[in-house]
Amino acid sequence: MMRLSTKGRYGTRLMLDLAIHYDNGLVLLKDIAKRQELSEGYLEHLVPLLKSAGLIISSRGARGGYKLAKTPSEITIKEIVTALEGTLSPSECINTPSICQRADFCITRDVWKELEEKILQTLESMTLKDIVDKYEDKIKNSVTYNI
Amino acid sequence: MMRLSTKGRYGTRLMLDLAIHYDNGLVLLKDIAKRQELSEGYLEHLVPLLKSAGLIISSRGARGGYKLAKTPSEITIKEIVTALEGTLSPSECINTPSICQRADFCITRDVWKELEEKILQTLESMTLKDIVDKYEDKIKNSVTYNI
DNA sequence: TATATTCCCTACCAATTTAATAGGAATAAT
DNA sequence: ATTATTCCTATTAAATTGGTAGGGAATATA
Image (tube, rainbow over all chains, first blue to last red; front, side, top):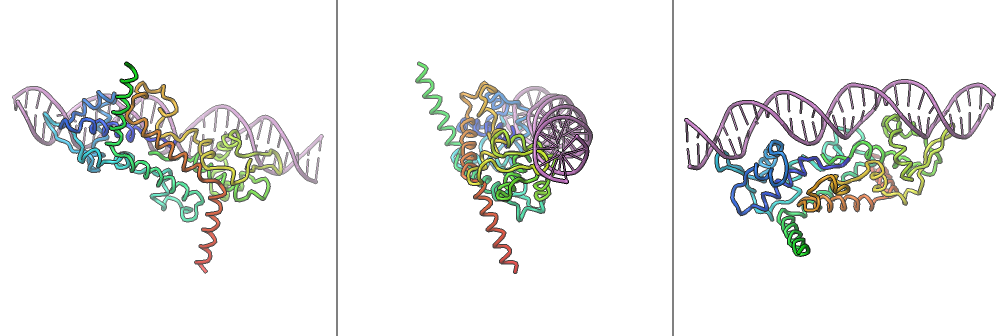
């Protein structure tokens, strides 16, 4: 169904939570899970993907936790989602033409290729900072209206 | 994995095959399956989706077959893919906010919403005619080079 | 009218993917 | 030594995907 899996969606929320608390030092996964109402056990599976992509840094043991490896304005949603999902290709043949003999002359392959490029462009244009800023505006305006 | 299912991909090939043979009257599903190297039985499942979306017209019985309901320049890939996949939302909460209590203030929902819009824009800008024209150019140039 | 051809419909199924849970090992601070 | 935390591996239930199978319904043609 062309849906992002929970890896991509939950992992992005994890990263945005880290961005929101960027100035508070190390953040516990337990706290992220609580705030985002996600299973801590499941988030544990996403962490290695984000770490090996160089997006977060961890510290083990008591007083340990996670933090972003770069500032929120230096991390794009594209980096996050590709780290988590592996690829955003609508069709596997874009990255691995060898899986299909017809790849060279497939009439639809260029369509999916162009679509993938647009998806990557869109996500590359969004940084964690952009999203957090918009989110904080939204919250602020909502409070104002509700007085 | 954010991948289009075979419904979307095979169904688009079916439609492009009909576009290529637009001037030849009714086309047999058997022939489409043969040319595209797809299972006829599986394509049969896609046909009702394309029919009820008003994209193809069928005729039963001997000498029956399928044809496009409009000219190739009047049919966009967006129409085709949404007919087949139902929606192109990266997240279900875009179309059905009620599935998630957090939808109203979710920090990522706007991200997925913007992504969906870009995907739809991209696919809406491509008609069957565009793709067929590009394809025929590609074939022609390739033959030239191979002499 | 009989027959061949074609689309149409429903049920079923095997393989894969998804979204977790569980249990414990490694590491660091107190 | 104890506690807190990340890290790693195995298992699993449920859902989705990508089909196959078999027959029914409509239509053109002889």
